[in-house]
Length: 297
Image (cartoon, rainbow, N blue to C red; front, side):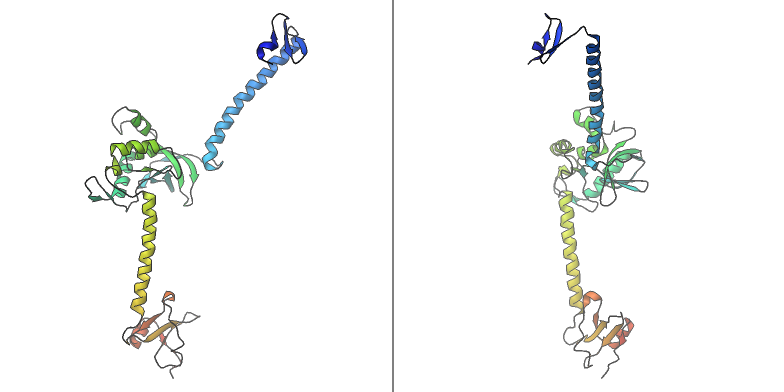
């Protein structure tokens, strides 16, 4: 039944189901007013609760006090306020040792440039950082704002400039010295697209995405470690009948060298990973801190 059918001006009454209550009844009127007041009060309470829940969503329900102070810039997306390291939320800048190429293909240190860009942007001014989370490195993950605003940092009054003025996170992406970190947020994707189209910052040439560069760097580091270990093994293994003295480390940590022809020599195995090695002479073994085996038969 529609609201139109519930109201009957001709009968002078409000119909609820099949029962009629005269609208002139003071008790019924009071009940209606009270019910409307309760519904209105409940509605006003629901909105703040929902907003509070939304504000906590990113941090899994946790809330953190804002951080304020003049920061020390560590790299293009990380600062330190006092003793607390702060990782700028939703963006990823080139790593400090990362290199890129400019529009003519010349190599340049884009990681250092990103760091300088953030340092120039802050310019020894105070930040206010709204903390979303604490990451596994115990860094506060935050959106940070300059206490006196970002007006004047870039010319023009276009929408892009206004949006970039909202936070230093957005400004770093807008200026092309950081990328939108889509793995964690899409907040800065539009700012990144404008920087790309304008050829600002690292978009002037070619570059590896910072997260790809880090992954490749870890793989390169592992390869370099393996190569160093292989080289150490190769250097320690005797060649052409030289350096036949075995420098062994026993279970107690004693460093003992064994000469060819001793009863224990053939059974002694050398583990380079444990720090054991070969020597070319007894004097070399003694100088390195090894003592002779007691079985010299």
